[in-house]
Image (cartoon, rainbow, N blue to C red):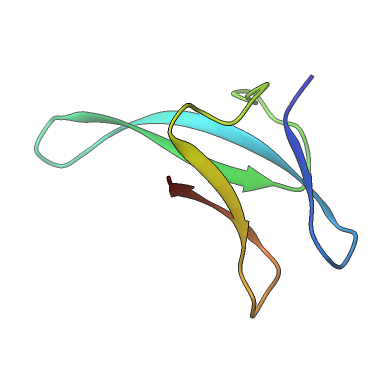
Length: 65
């Protein structure tokens, strides 16, 4: 079951992760929220992170604790 965050407007977002290749050849894991469940959905928030809602748009973001 994918981690779901419901913002103050009642819209549900699901947490995902993806490994990307940077220009220098280094690989990095990115985290993002989407309105639907896609491949790469996570079951929980990664350790050391917390979910916060932006005040302007209501979109959820991950912040380091």
